[in-house]
Image 1 (cartoon, rainbow, N blue to C red):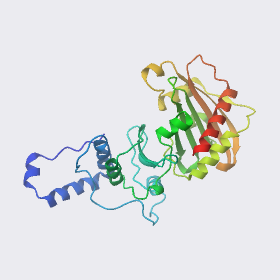
Image 2: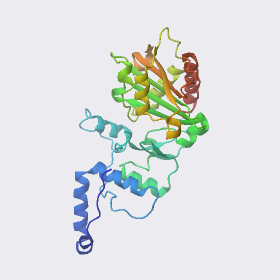
Image 3: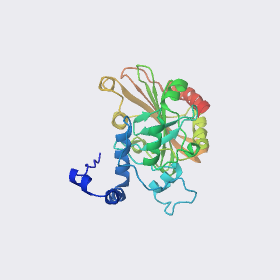
Image 4: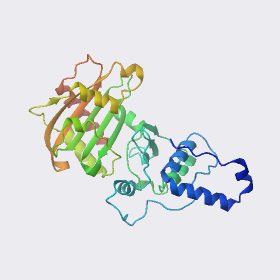
Length: 304
């Protein structure tokens, strides 16, 4: 991660406050995302003033549309009402509001912080350019605590760019650490090899759109023919979605199936993939996997 070195001692003692502010503002202008990311990680878990707090009042929660909506990053930041900076592990820095407990929570890539102090929330609001006084405008997602209570494990949603589909991942809270993965993507000549390599982004569509796809997955008919994952496709998933600690990754393995189906919520033909992470010798018949996802989708729809 980009690190900003502290100014030398003689600089701090002999420069005026306005000169220091001018110097820091020039750094922020050159590297806005890096400065904010450094600030976020430096503040979680400790208190006190931080010179990385931006002094400007610009906020993505404005009413006007951004000028360049062809740019994915600009459009995503506008829809998520915050600066949604990428993290080093492929995720983003994001503030969410849980639809169950109504608490704001913070996600930084694969790390979740479900209970924020008022000080932490205030600092994150400044760093991410989010309006913490209008939390109802922030994206909704189950916090880790409510997800574990109501779904028996950690549930996360990703959305493919241009609203092409959804990526649903669930990991049980039990010591077995079973993982279930569902990927639904508009067909458009997409192959399974390509699908397992796609990286989803933060969901920017409405909760209604996502619930419609989850409801469709709950009642998805049994397909006439399926394509089982090859060893290479299983390995691709294991590289993109590690199976936990070293002790579990050596005994668990992805098993999956894919098929084509018509999905009205996504407007036509889609490629559907269901996968489960289990010990290598554990049976993973497709019928059990489809039924398991149907039950899980019903539980998700009840709380989303």
